Image 1: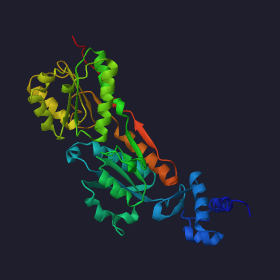
Image 2 (image 1 turned 180 degrees about the horizontal axis):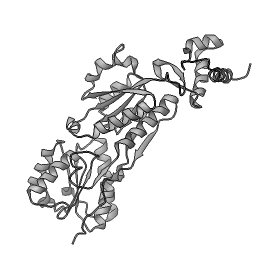
Image 3 (image 1 turned 90 degrees about the vertical axis):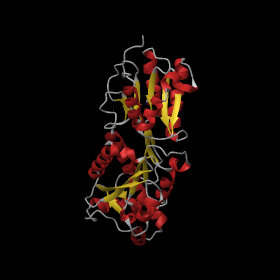
Image 4 (image 1 turned 60 degrees about the vertical axis):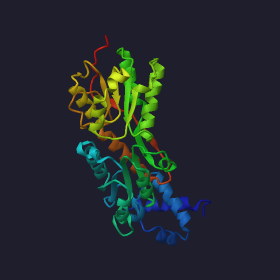
Length: 356
């Protein structure tokens, strides 16, 4: 026999697949195949690994191993929207991502189900053995990506693809395939655009200081301020505890603009931005004629109809990238983890008059 028995086993299985020996697309179990070839399961798994990596088969967890492209490859993916301020659900952004994910998963032969949870305990009954967990093949997580929820999902030992980052940095995040915003593509770019228009006191208005996504964005803002030679003034940076429109409106009403001397704003959260814009309107301040405002937001969010420049990532791009990473993980379970960063783009041409 050859030095590497698994190579011969893989070749034999491939010939049997080509000859149509598995009409429903499903291969026998690892135990059955190992007994048939007279080898241990480690050797058999190495043969299946080679077949997965060349695209011949795909493994779907407890569902089994299937010939790629067969109609029998019908699995289910859980889409978990987790740990978020549920005001986000009042706009169409998460619904748009879910719809795009469903379409992309269906095109790849998978059903999907959405779980909206605010804490880890809400997942317990859904992930118990014999419940929904039994028929799942993988998870796609988005929203706040609360670390306790992520840790709870990880106990199921199924592939996880994250859309976005966890609130707090953790090594578990490094073991999941992930798509996230490139941190310099919004706050930093806004500073550079405004600097070119003659604005010098550009304020950063964020939320939830200490969260990973806020710190990355704020770091990009500070770097762009330093590179542009603009003043670094603590009065120009505000982090609101509440992620709601009233917090933004109250900030403007409190005299923030007068205290800081800000001549332009970058707002990291679109819900807060709506309150800020309402507060500016109440003071008779016209945007962008009197005060330019840039927002990190989303297609269909609460400021998308107001004509304010937004840095956004299209839901279809997020969904297609997430499903591509997931299909790769299902086909090659031992492949290196991938972290992809997507660049947000402006929702509209920037038409801001230069500062006089």
